[in-house]
Length: 306
Image (cartoon, rainbow, N blue to C red; front, side, top):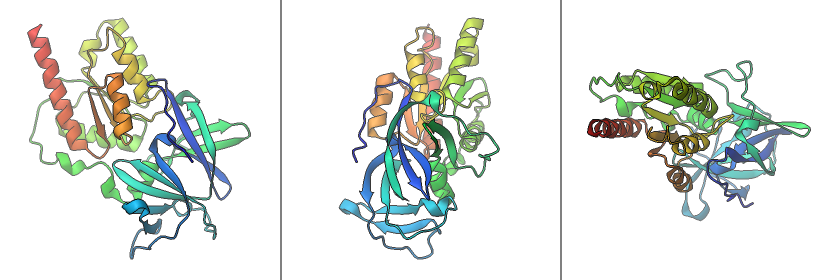
């Protein structure tokens, strides 16, 4: 199946691949997918996590295979199914699914954010739900699934342990991130790095509404010195937020950092075209702090030269 579907930049749209497990319907953002392969035998790894089936090597690249039925607590059955080969957070991983149903083009505004009754902060693996004709499609949090299996693939918090005590408290930063767990990790890391004035938003729409409100009140530059945004978020994604900021004469001077598991070569080009000032992939929290420092220093220099 060809998953190389190109979307225009900043339109707040995404492509979702629908697949099934035990008769239930699930989805994954096509931007994460490299290809889809028919099932092939894998080599088991001794003492691996119960959800790791093993490894295989298509075209000389070793790929770990994760059994999604096991991850979701669904009954095991003896069917071959398919491998969805993904690339995010600089990792190549295959997810073993039953069958693929098709691809749907949607707006992020169509994705319903699951409430706390079905998505507890520490354990939920759903980032959203789509109602499509007669069925519900659950969008899975593949980053969390992988991090739960292998915690060292998540944010590399140790990267900032060596930072000396710094005072950056006069620099207010706006953050748009829909994952409560990731948001807590990011904010904890930034506070350790001296950035304590953090304005937290659960999606791009919330962040955009606040920016417009601050502009109307006349205190935009006092309240926001920088925006850090994820890409995948309900209501409004990070590319759309970046586009709106960088096309607005009153806002375009605000540095925007895209911090997402989806920053691969293609997504980096999209971010550059939209005017993002820096783009980093999720594990690189140390590099995020360096990028913030660099852009804050440039902002200060520009203001001093005025």
